[in-house]
Each structure stands twice: as structure tokens, then as C-alpha cells.
Image (tube, rainbow, N blue to C red):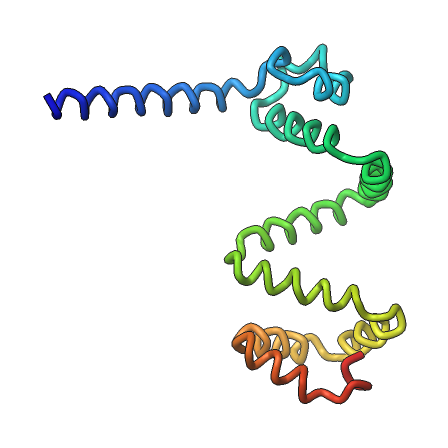
Length: 171
């Protein structure tokens, strides 16, 4: 009896997984989108069924995020998208590649990078510029060595190093 229940559960799981895989291959049906998503994606209505499933999924998730945004957030997103579209193709390709590299990092490394970026953003514009200038004055080899040295440090070692730096040298 227990064996037949086990196989029944396995059969149900296999069916559900098969259905989920099939749904992913098919994408998102237009009718399954909320009214708000359909309104946001209205320009795709006529061609929706011919879009690749992955694109349908990305668009539907984006429309859902858009619907959840405040008017101010929407305005900011529109400005960022306009700046993105104005970039040359090779620059957009480079940014996508860097994003993919970032996404492939372990979660703790991504978190460390986000924290460092946040600290950088908290600096004054003058301090940011000083830091950029100092970095650009390094030779490519010095930059690589510096990057590797920081990668090899533990978070505690990095913090001790920051604490030892005179305030005026921190940028």
C-alpha cells in the first residue's frame, strides 16, 4: 500500500513538473495577464502569441513591477530607459556582459560589491572624483594587483585597512 502511494505521489509530481515545463515553453498567455499588465503591454497585444516564451515572461514580470511603482518611480524608470536607449549598441552590449558577470558571482561577493558601491555613493562628489582620479592614475598592472589584493582579503582585513587609512587619503 505504501509503495502505491509513493508511486502515486511521484506520478503527481512528475505531472506537475511536466505541466510547469510546458507552461514555461509556451510562455504567458495574453488572457492570463492582469488588466494593468495588459494596459502596460498593449503595444504587444497583436504580436504577443508570436513572442518567444522567455520574452513574454520578462515582459509580464516587468509590467507587474511597473504596476507596483509610484508615479515618481515610473518617471525615474522612464528616464533611465531613455538614457539606456541613447547609448551606442557596443556600450549596451558591454553593460549587459558586465551584468552577466556580476550575476555569476557568489551571493556574498555580490553583496560586498553592493556595499562598496553604497559607500562610494555616500562620498561627496569631490571625494568620488578624487577616488576616480587616483584609480585612473594607476597603471593597468597596478589596478589588477589592487583588485586581486582586495579579492584575497577577508572582510575584516578590508575593514582594518580602511580604518588605518588617513581620512584625507580615503578620497
